[in-house]
Amino acid sequence: MRTFISYLYSRFRTIAALTLITVIFLWVFTLYNAPSDAVIYGAMITAVTGLAAATVDFIGYRRRHKRMRELTGEITITLENLPKARDRIERDYEQLIVKLFDDRRELENTIIQKETDMTEYYTMWVHQIKTPIAAMRLTLQGMDTAEARELSEELQRIEQYVEMVLCYLRLDSDSTDYLIRRCDLDEIVRQAVRKYSPQFIRRKLRLDYEPLNYSVLTDEKWLLFVMEQVISNALKYTRSGTVRIYLDGDDLCVRDTGIGIAPEDLPRIFEKGYTGCNGRTDKKASGIGLYLCRRICAALGHDIIARSDESGTEIRIGLQREKIDTRD
Image (cartoon, one colour):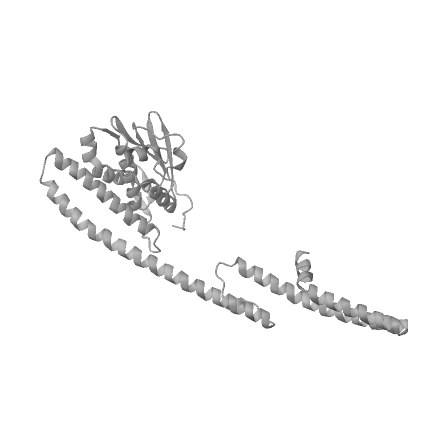
């Protein structure tokens, strides 16, 4: 019905003109006292012919409208599928569409090229910055002083930020190298703990961890990155007490006895760039770590949630693989 009303509106001038012409002819026939039979016969022929022409025209209009609706629903519109123009005005519109299409395609290619160049530059920068970081770490390994240990911890923080940059770039890349296979969860956890063991010692924090004896279908490298981020956050916000790593059913849990997360911040901690009250106080939070963890877990088919109260914070990683998020 809406299509028919739209058709009548688009043909309003034509219908009005034909109606006016019909009225004029009827008026002229009346003035000259033309036989009524001849007038009625001519009117019927004209009406039938006009109705047939209008029906054919409406069918074509409806077909073209349906095709345009189909094109708007497609992800990619190709100009070859556009209905052919029937008159000069439609050809003008077609040329306008072609011009807009070409301009948009050129703009998209420019944006893609800029993003590619930027990604390549930052990827190269990340790999180059690792060389002086490794050199500084070798230098600090020969020193056993409080200052050297503090510098080593800050250097580890720099390494973490560099890895976050590389992870961020790879997540948005079309060639992200996921390798899904059966992995020993204890091996992944031990690698993460081993990396931050100097901080456990320096901060005098207790690690509560026993072998999990669990096999998980995942990508070892990416899940290790998630574990490192979670343990790093636990160390950052725990001044004393314990960091506990345990298995609850199919959930890998990391619980600390730190300062906790404010209730108003808890629903948003996995958002990009959100640091919350603790981040604003610490002034070192980037708001990227947990955001990357959420995206990685979604890509691996895991889920990640946070719970917090006055006794500390708990991060739970669901290891049962759900539907993989192919958008990442």
